[in-house]
Figure 1 (spheres, rainbow, N blue to C red):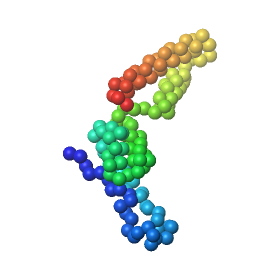
Figure 2: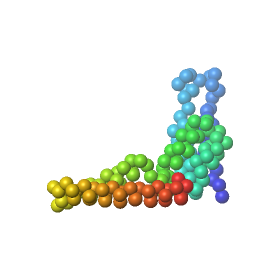
Figure 3: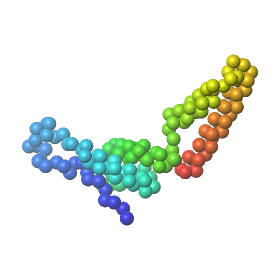
Figure 4: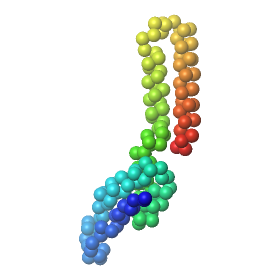
Length: 141
């Protein structure tokens, strides 16, 4: 069963625009936006696509830019659920593996052994990154 779409932020207007001062023309959409993001996160946890969520927000009265922004925020928050990784996470993992492999090695003073160890480590890191890439493609992220 599908949940009801979040409230449109423009529904909060009370008085006609001609009777308001310029400051009163500002619409506070913070609460409706938070509710929309939470709704979109729930929808994406239920495996709905970015496009479906954005389309439903548009149908609910949100502006195109706002709907896409809400859906993008929800996409970023559900990244871990979908098995996606950011570049920073990949680089941090490779850096962590490199530092762990190079710490406390007795052969660091022997250039030939150190070079061989670095080559082995690079090949292992490349293999783990390729496996992670294949896994994320299988999941469709």
